Length: 119
Image (cartoon, rainbow, N blue to C red):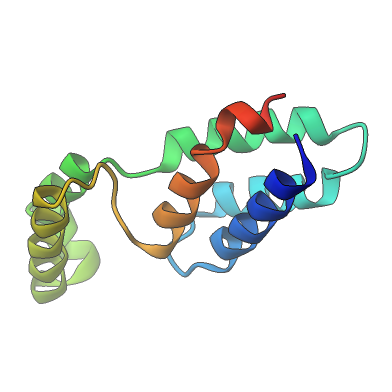
């Protein structure tokens, strides 16, 4: 991976781990990747980061379905779940494939560089 890609991903990983919507597993994978950059563990931690992000990023259809469910209303509260649901439908209509919360947005940006990261 070239330095430009490394710098970009470093910035996005920091955005990811500081996002309120980032799960503990992705936060840990991000922190481990940051520690491993420039070491013999970088390739392994890059693989683990990508695997974690691919598992965690929320496809827009799942977001819409979850926020329309009782579980979504229980997690977010009925009004917030409806707001997120409506927002999800709007961004899907505009072409979004994934949730656009801060964690998912950072994950999507990192995953766009997957091929470069794996070199």
